[in-house]
Length: 441
Image (cartoon, rainbow, N blue to C red; front, side, top):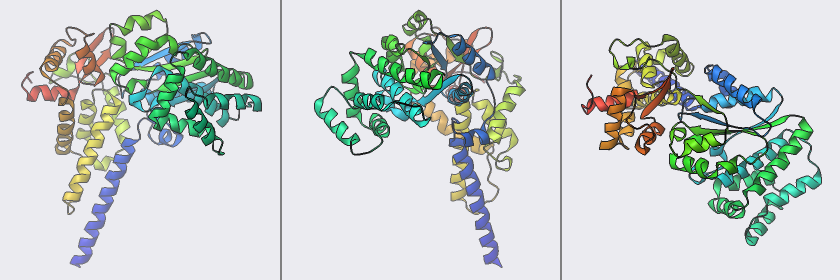
């Protein structure tokens, strides 16, 4: 009898472990790209941003470019995937790709971005059965397999000639081989116009065959290190704007606040659409014990959690606190919730006899401790001072200083928008400042 009860308890624990593991894995599905993920987890928000994106693309000239800015993790990727699907149902041939899927993130530059555009356009055309004459296909194959160094070209042609899918071979090399990326850079760095012409050639074939305008949407450029982003846009924006079709480029919010980059972005006259962070409070209200949050916004974020964590695994008030600690950034909501699930999985393994484990205030505080320490890793005396000033005044002394922009890029500081722009410190970083007695309760 005792043995049977013990076995039943073990089975119950295993079930609990599997439910938390599934919640943990479901929280990993962000951003939402494929149809199954969207069907299971999407919560509609920022529809006004999609409308503004559509208007900007529709009103742009045939070679128009668009800059889409926002905090890392604010939901741009999920929104762009929805936008791409929506535009493809209209008169557009849409190619949507993440630069992270094609190029090692530490090695992204304007040359391999343009090369990736040409490559993905041809891949998308092939995938969609766009008719390409044999002579044109051979010409494109010759171009993609010809580089500056004769031995590299010979090896590449030999590898492709073995019968493999040359697009898959080139794509894999671009992603995985630093020597190949360096070869592409050496080949086209001084003749980026050739890269743009080749992309134009492929786009022209698509437009003639499909009778649709080409629209390329490039995601995840905003997730690059800030210095790399600034260099790509500050020094090479004219190269990125060479292709003669519509392109949406992503950029982090910190980059468009850079005093050197902003005039350059303004000079190219490309529309800049900004995806704002979800506001839970009016300016300053989050600092008040009786601050009254926007319940509609809170409910939206609670719905995102509810689609991933079964209600029996989380206390309602704790779910609300997770939402508030996110600061209105979707990825932060997901990051905090995943950390909570991880703490529960650890507890189940260390205390297998328990069947009452759920995400509660104690679990949340354990999760926040780890995330708080992550934020603290990059902080020094000067940055703490900037954070305190920003918290107290809802703006820093210098919103374009390199130190402040780094804090903005790292999500230590969040940018909000009403009639005016204003800033606040990430709620978890606020906890850090309080623990260090740099601000009062």
